[in-house]
Image (cartoon, rainbow, N blue to C red):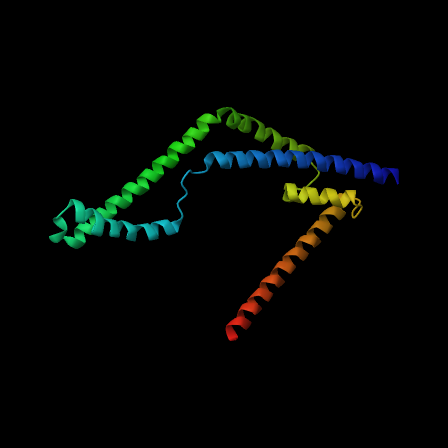
Length: 192
């Protein structure tokens, strides 16, 4: 009984160590993503929707007030000014984003250097000292595994992992059943 209890305590300590390290890695990953995040995010639909706007702008606004050339070359001039306006707008957004990312990097040089130095050390420490398989290296999974031991649903790592996998499959099955039920409801509503 004492051997089982001490093994369980050692496993809990190792889980806690792994959880703390993984949370630190997740924070570093989030920080790096934040530094790389663009100020102006352009979705693909923007390109499709913006070109007609630039066509409208060039045909009805710019041409009407600034140029009288549209009387001679209406279609060519409209397309030309639309393409130029579109390219200028996209270029402006690109350079604003590039400047913004460089600015964030310059403001956070110390944190970036810390991440670059500390990240490989954490991963090396995890690979040498953690008994938890890499497939379960997420804070959510580690918290659940820890709760299995604390709540006495499992006594060792193998039981924890098996219970976790069973529950994951169960949640996946429930999500699939919900999707099927929603599809059935939509089909039923379409038939009415």
